[in-house]
Image 1 (tube, rainbow, N blue to C red):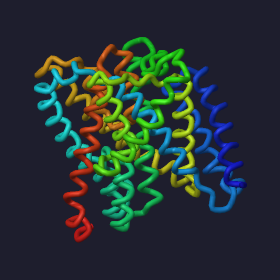
Image 2 (image 1 turned 180 degrees about the horizontal axis):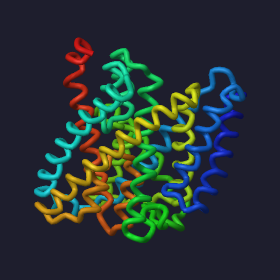
Image 3 (image 1 turned 120 degrees about the vertical axis):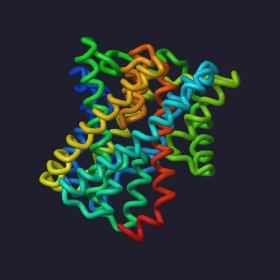
Image 4 (image 1 turned 90 degrees about the vertical axis):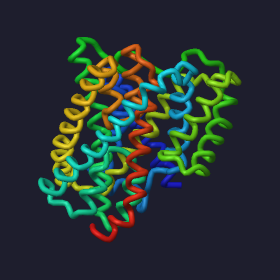
Length: 350
């Protein structure tokens, strides 16, 4: 019972933080606000939480599935006409992932002084949960590994929308009022959300998809949309709740970490993320010259951050959010496949 009360109290605090972040015009306010608030509780007041408390995994997974359904519902048949162009950009993205991983490893190993296993798995530009799981099995420092992986996502989803807003001279993404959700969706439509989410989640587990809690529901919603069988409409309030839950869960990952460890990890992440964004900009400019694709669209397709906010930024630029999402899924898939193929070799040499 104390754990349930703690969860409700955290969600209430996060809801207030999300509302304040929204009023402040932050990008993805209902994710960033709760993340900051719950992270502050986790690092400054861990003794106030019940002994052995952990944010409920089932609750987090359930609402990640909602976000997956929202993104998948944006897929249409026009996306497949871009297949020939995707081959080149996917190849470039694979090269980006390899170079970014090498750069990050150097940062964490040489500047951070991390051991080889911790540096290697902290350096991956995608596959957050897979990197943490494989890193733990390889003997990596789990606290540092978890911190660096989450800081990567936090910094990208915060810095990139703000940077693009300054560059374009107007707010982009959720800060600009953009959303993939629908207003005024009747309650009767929600009857499709639960079975679609369950089918996607368990289908993703069966197929061993990367980030299955997101990609499985996304695939189901996309299949329904492309086939014309049904178009899922996700109400805005449900998307906001999903972001509050996911943001709270992310912030609670910092439980037990000292402020000095977080500050040190943040400094390393600024160098790591800054280097990756510069590298992403170089690849985006190359594809702009070779393929004629807009630079900003390619930049958000390569930026190693959160899928949801990158899709929202794409929407504000009048780009296809499903196309951007597809690039991010490929980045994650390529990274996870690479880790899986090299796992045995890494355990012998790290």
